Amino acid sequence: MDIIVSNASSDPIYAQIKNQLKAAIINDQVAPGHKLPSIRRLASQLRVSVITTKRAYDELELEGFIDSVQGRGSFVASKNTELLKEEQRKKVEDYLKSALASARVAGLSVCDLKELIDLLGGSDECD
Image: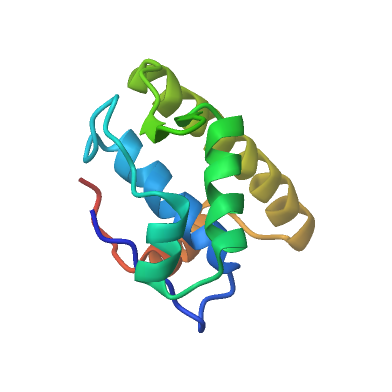
């Protein structure tokens, strides 16, 4: 699992780390119980502040993606990955509802939104 941070991204570095780890967990790239790099080690590898990696780990723990054990490290939570995926799907649905409401106010059609999603997603194909 490689984490790539970019100073050019509009997302803060801690969010980039958190989102990439979250995606790896949801997509089964790391198994439940897998030990994550220590906060210091990851900070060193990414050449970022320890505070930055700690914030990413803290938020992942609050969201139920990882468990941290004092003196042992951080591990991928054994929580049901299907439940995690469903929680993320619900968030996406909420964002889309908000986007639909904003689109209506702006006078955009559903077709306009689909086109915009294709442009933002970088692909016009569905898997």
